[in-house]
Each structure stands twice: as structure tokens, then as C-alpha cells.
Length: 481
Ligand code: NAD
Image 1 (cartoon, rainbow, N blue to C red):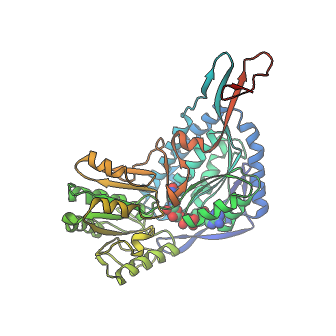
Image 2: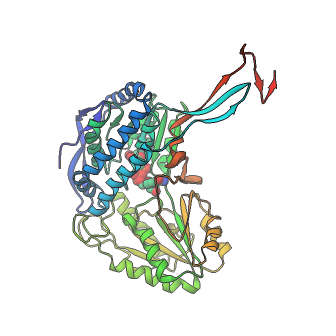
Image 3: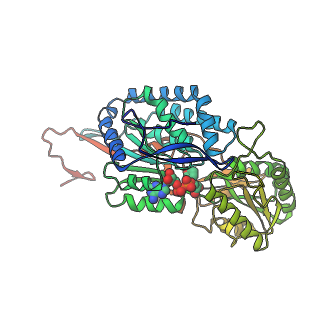
């Protein structure tokens, strides 16, 4: 694969320097991506600024563009999905789903209406609350769902009348670069600019004077740096950060049913999902049955190269993350945990790790307390429901969580006590464009999706039209001053 270029001001911009992109299924560099220079980044923000002047003024054109973008995505999955599998590692079928999901997000926002709210209309005045675009947005994405997470930003930001400069992760830049090329035909130049480079490029973006908003998805550690860098000129920020989602199984749950569903919620995308299940709390009475169910699935699932038919789990995306999962699992075992199945890297090229279920483990172990972001799941026994809710909440994380039981009302009551942005009942990872998604505590600031996510790409404006003849009706809370 070759010829990946940046899109700046609607043009192909090859860079002077480039960096290698590794296929995690074999650990080898298979393509190169442009390394954006500071001057090129300035050019991208300049193009976005110029394009925004017209882009913000025609809402129906923006809606039509979003629908055209969806059509391009749907027609291009055959071209995009293999690139995504090669750079990210996920099975081809899931790469296709990621492309389709991106199209669905464009369609949803193309049709989302947010009419002005009239909050006063009387003899004194008519007051409307409206939403205005922020301006130029800098968007930064991670490597686990490079395309879908980009469209969680692109679609609402563009609908709101902003323009964008987008930087994908250096581990997975290629699909996003390719998409920008494919979309050039359906939007004015400068509306969507895609640049690629390392982490330093992200820091240049957050410190750049042009963007008025940074929309960031990635780790908590980087999210804090983004917040600091955006603060001096009061850029707006949305931060979608890491999670350590608990799943709490109640004592009336069917162990066979929940172990299947929890396995799916934990090992989707090989565990590399911000809101995957990352620790499971099971009552002592069901512990062995749930562990057996999870271990049976983990040992039976087909792990392999995402391009091979039948592969259900691919490799871990990159070498640092591979090392981290190895380290956390080894640490747990050295502190007394047992691998009911898995427990080590696979003996083959690439970043493959055996799907792992850890037992005899509790809070205070790193893999329970930290975000593992990989195919290894600790299962923790508990006795008392109030105590387990407290343990689930005793963390800086607060992205999502789930509660599982036959009595859905009781499960919902427990789920309501979780301190997190999404509380699922008898499911996990159910995401939709109309459903707000964001984290409590260190898992983020703000939300994406739905009208709430759209609002984050806007400034709020009160339009107060006086009906008085002389313009002298200055009031504060109805009191004439
Ligand atoms: P990361 O924080 O290392 O990198 C994310 C992006 O930030 C990359 O594009 C990177 O180049 C860029 N970056 C790095 N340093 C930067 C800096 N100083 N300034 C600006 N940008 C910088 O995260 P990752 O390893 O790519 O992704 C995994 C993490 O993302 C996990 O913690 C996961 O939970 C989280 N995540 C969160 C969500 C969510 O919606 N809450 C979704 C997916 C992933």
C-alpha cells in the first residue's frame, strides 16, 4: 500500500518526511504516512478558517453534504476496510462495520433538527436561544476505532457550521487520510483537512491560535495535557478518555447467558474499546459457573490475522500496548491471580495475546485498578451488593458500567448507583448516534452524540428582540432599572 497523502484546502499534500505504519498482524511496516510540518499545519488551519466563512452560512448545503459523505463511505467500504484491517488489526468484517457506522453517523446528523427555543414572546420582547458555530475545530483521534470515532466528531462539527483539522493516531493514520481524499469531491475545499504525524503534531494543534475548540478522544494522560494546552486561550474542549468499566452480575442472573454477553462486551475489538467491560464482579454463588463460561469462550474463539476468514479477534494494535497487556497480566499472576485460560503472548509474529480470563483476583491488583485495553479480563468474587457498588465506584474512571440480572428493575436500580456516563442493564457497548456518550470524573469532559454532542460544537446565543419603541426597556429579571 502506498500513496497516502494529507488533504489540506482540498488538495493532496505529500510531506517531505514520512513515518512507517506497522501491520500488527506481523509487526512489519507496510506503508508510510506523511509527517505534517508546522507550516503545513498552519496551512491546514488557514484553509479551515477561510472555508468556514461560507460553510457556516448555508445549513441546507451542510445537511446535503453530510448525506453525500455517507454515500461516499457506503460506496467505499471495499477500498477502506482492507486499509483499516491492515493498520488496526481488526477482522475485515468489523472493519466494514466501522465504515458503515461512520456513514450512519453522517446520516443521523444530516437529519438532526435543533430548532431555536423561544423563551419569551410577550409585549416586552421576543427572546430566542439559538446555537452558533464555534469556528475551526481541531480533532484528535486514537487507534482503536480510527474511522468511527473521527465521524463522531466530523458529522456534528460540520453540521453545526464549523470546519475541521483532523489528526488520526500515528498507529492508524491511513484510513482517515484515504477517507479525506475520497470526500474531497462532495465538500468545498478546506472544510475537512486531515493531517498526519506523531504525538507532537497533536500538541501543536492544541496550542495553535486558530482552532476555537479541541475535540479529543484518547487516554486520560493525554487528555490532561490537551486540557492544559487548550486553557491559555480558553479553547473549548471535549475530552473522551479512558475507562475501566465494571460489570456487576447479580445473584439472580443466568450464568450461561451473562457469561456469553459479558465475553462479547469485554473482548469486542480484542478488548481495545474505551467502554469495554474491564472488570467483572460476580457473586460467590455464581463465580465458578461464570468463570467457566467466560473461559470456555476465550479458549474457543479464533484469534488471527484480520484478513483470514473465520478470524474473530485480531492482534493488539501496537507494540507499546502489547507490552502493557503482557505486563499487567504477568503482574496479576505474580500477585496470586490464576489464568483460567490464556495468560501469555502467542508464539507467532505480530502482537497476538491469548484471550485471558483471570481469577483469584481482587481490587488493588493493577489489572483491576487500571485500564488494560486488551484481551485480558479479571473476574472478582463479591458477597455484598452495597460493598461491590462502592468498589465499582472507587476509581477515577467513570466512563460506563453494566449490571446483569433476571430482575431488570432491581438491576436498573443498582445501575443507577454507578458513577459513570452510561449505565447499561443486561447489555454493554450498546451505542447509538442519538445516545449521549461521555465520562464522569477522569473519563472525560462533555459528551458526544445526540443533540447534546451537537451542542458541544456550538456557542449558545440569546437573541433578544425588544418590542419597546424607544429601546430603553433595560430590565434585570423583569425589574426595570
Ligand atoms: P493517546 O492518548 O495515546 O493518543 C490519542 C491521540 O492523541 C493520538 O492521535 C495521539 O497522537 C494524540 N496525542 C498524543 N499526545 C498528545 C498531546 N500531547 N497533545 C495532543 N494530542 C496528543 O491514546 P491512544 O493510545 O491512541 O488510545 C487509547 C486510549 O483512548 C484509551 O485510554 C481509551 O480508553 C481511550 N479511548 C476513549 C474513548 C472515549 O470515547 N471515551 C474512545 C476510544 C478510546
